[in-house]
Image 1 (cartoon, one colour):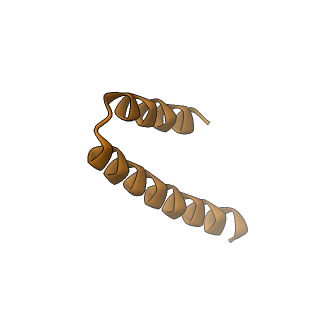
Image 2: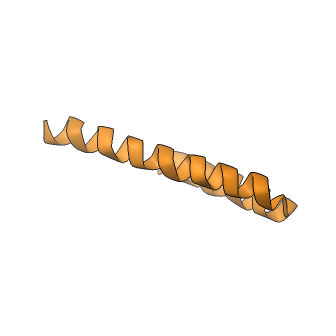
Length: 47
């Protein structure tokens, strides 16, 4: 949960700066990394 809070804080900070291309880039990277973590975590728990 802490990691999620940190990511939300980063997204909020980037969004507040109004750097839209960078914001979108970070958003895509974080979204993709979250999927990877969820898949890894699911396989760890499931396996």
